[in-house]
Image (cartoon, rainbow, N blue to C red; front, side):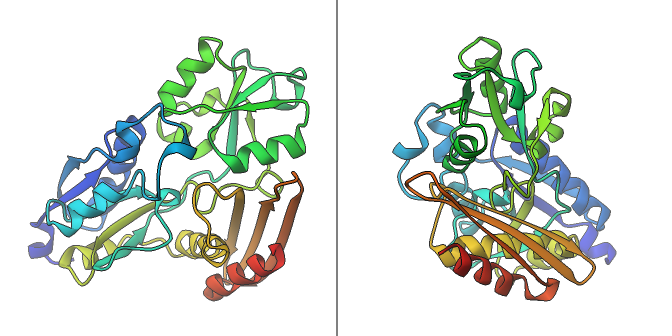
Amino acid sequence: MTSAAAAVTVRLGTRGSALARAQADIAASALGHAGITAVETVVVHTHGDRHPETSVEELSGQGWFTAELQRALLDGEVDLAVHSYKDLAIARPTGLTLAAVLPRGDPRDAAVTRDGTPLADLPAGSRIGTSSPRRAALLAALHPGLVAVPIRGNVDTRLRKLDSGEVDAVLLAGAGLDRLHLGARAVTRLDPARFVPAPAQGAIAIEARTGSAEAALAGAVDHGPSAAAARAERAVLTALGGGCLLPLGAWAEVDGDRLTLHAMLAGDDGTIATALVVGAADGAEEAGRRAAAMLR
């Protein structure tokens, strides 16, 4: 990295939640290690942030937590945008590129219970807060005595609702808890081969304008294995034409040049279709397409 590049001030767009800011700090630190020493964080409020109690089903379209950030990029208000990769819609706006995927956090779902009881030991009828159709479907299949109830809000809000007795447990992304230094609250980290995470869960994506100098700078912090795993998982989603409301899970592990992909899709009748694909890490998208074909 040249000294001229290091002197550039990069404006990094982020949502305003505590988790989003923590992820922006991780991105800023990574960019700093690549030689960029001046990162200005710009908070952009998204549609999902402005409607924190609206159910997922009522929020129209996709990009609830990303569209405004992408617009700020296209309008030149920010130079880079940091996202929870799983929030990105399948279709990327013209003029934007995925510049980097940072080293992935824990991809697993985590259960937090009010009294510390493991998820599997909760009594029948216990209310489990989740806004995810995937988590609700897997909960019904693997823990049929427990009842999924809708819950919205950021991580702190959901934990407050848990602590106040609104629900008996919540299901959250383990990486999110870890980044907020709340990982100790997770009483159970769920086996990702059975309770399959959302595609790209735990991954942080950095988006930029196509062909921009900032895109090239951000590319220096791309983590190949995390990017390949996320590409495989997102390819399942793309092949099935789904979005956030599709009860789909996909989780890939990369070991050297080998990629192992687990995927699941819940049917309307509550059945769970599963797929396991082993392939080459440089054929991530093809592995995802193969898994999608098996799920069909």
